[in-house]
Length: 441
Image 1 (spheres, rainbow, N blue to C red):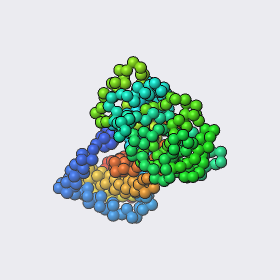
Image 2 (cartoon, one colour):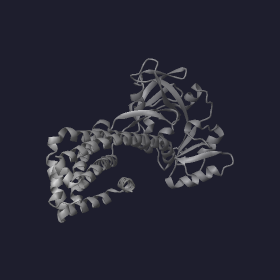
Image 3 (cartoon, rainbow, N blue to C red):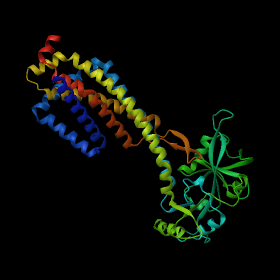
């Protein structure tokens, strides 16, 4: 019966701990701030709180004498927070880069049931119908701002890689209206390519990723040599692309008059529903129409979730190790302070102040580890450039983004680890029989 009650007690503690961690993870910062204020008032205004502050003060003042064991907790938690924040900042940077690429007043038209731009094919007749749909903005010369574009994957040598190591770059064949549809794209070096020539302009991200992308050099795309005549910058995923004349790209890769997609600039974001309805109701077309914001958000969703899941799994595994480190350290601390704790309880200190005092000491170490880990993640990874395959076509270059929200999440993880690591040693300190503790030392 005694063993059963002990097991039941442990089970209830575990369930309460799990529920508390879930609530901690989901709670917004105002709720946590309110709890912190309430806790501070309890320590200032109640006898138990003042006792807890006194005991915690003694323990914290001796931390320097236990610098070795305490540093295990701090370093372990700092490592968890640094890795977790770094992984999540990669997902955030990837998502943010693709989110900046689209807008609500620009529409993308693909062949029906195409999962991505590269899988779509639109013939010339369909393109002509799409360009005449209502809601498309007009250029100064009266032409609709609709850009039929061809997208292919091209292999290029990676900068700094082995001689036979190639990467995949997204080569986009465009016409003159593409620059008007995407006014955010600016030529920062050289000039635009000329129609009818094998010339390319290179995104700043692609230039960092691949070799031979300097203005004036020749690169091999397909079976032909192309001249690099300019570098452009857009501040979004387009920076990872190489642009050339659509007819020349189609000729090189034998695409004929077909194009992968039509990108249309709408006169207003509110025109999208009418534009989409007009295309859906035209019996000559079988197309899917989305805003570019919606398209790129969907493209980023899967990869972003994968990176986040990997980050949380890796962080959870490391957190388990950090929890055991904290448990070991705090159990050792409680053991060395057993006589002190027993004496305090013998003169009238109740169990709650002892539990709170041990928890405060652990949480302080966890807070320090969380701050160090967050600072390391920000210093090392914020703005760090990486690349990955996107859309099944080419390398997407993006920057890690260590945001305030991620740092706050890392701090919550650190405090959660400290709470779990300190709870059981604190309970042991509060329930240790006074006579046994005094006789043991």
